[in-house]
Image 1 (cartoon, rainbow, N blue to C red):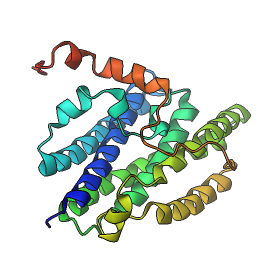
Image 2 (cartoon, one colour):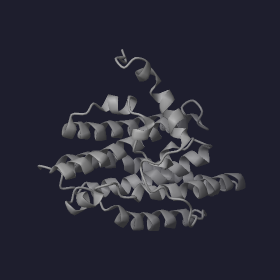
Image 3 (tube, one colour):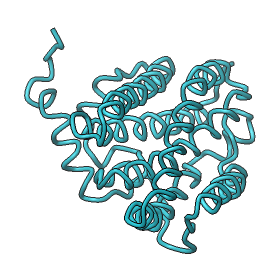
Image 4 (cartoon, one colour):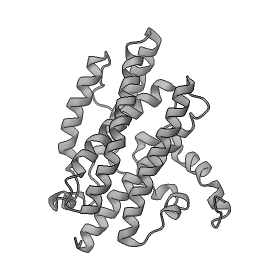
Amino acid sequence: MNLDPYLKEALLARLTALADDEVVLAQRLSEWVGHAPILEEDIAIANLAQDELGHAKMWLELRGELDGSDPDRLVFLRDPLEYQNAVLVELPKGDWAFTMVRQYLFDAYEEMWLKEAQKSAYAPLAEAAARAHREERFHLKHSALWVERLAQGTEESHRRAQEALETLFPYARQLFQPLPGEEALVEAGLVPEPKALEGAYLEAVGGFLRRVGLRPPEGGYVPKSRQEHTEYLWSLLAEMQSVARWDPEAKAW
């Protein structure tokens, strides 16, 4: 499929946002390695972080096929202001309830987006979405189970889960804010329509949360732009990019 320059630019932006969400979330998950509440989860969260990085690599390689960009340079040598991730994924890891509620909110979005993206008229995107969707279904089951455990566990675990939800839920809605040029991508059948997905998301996620005894908050600040970040992204990227910044030619061997 030949893309005109406008559609190509918009698709590059969408692929970048998809990858940046995964990269930044993977870094937050990796902070739990060696610190998870039980050994089984220590292994599981390491695997989850690796999966998210694998998805990021997939999206960046797809971008590279369009513009020749190098995935490693995009991840390790871009300035924080050039990152296109949602605020949801860059917030500090917090406690286990915060991490699992965030993971559930993101997994539910990603599973829904990937399912619809398999219908894309751009075959490479549809194929990539199908591959990632197979893994994402398991991610969602894992995080949903933890949210249920926390919500229905002790009074303390319920309190922490509810507090995390009140902080995170408005930020999750940023995931459905259209990117510049995305309307044209939707019209061309290349990506799912964000606002249509948001309605289905609010119904499905809200229903699940209420069934397990949590109350999705109403209102709250929803970031409007992917250029909007918190100070937490700067410190996260400073640590993640330190070796590459020190020696751009560094190798893993």
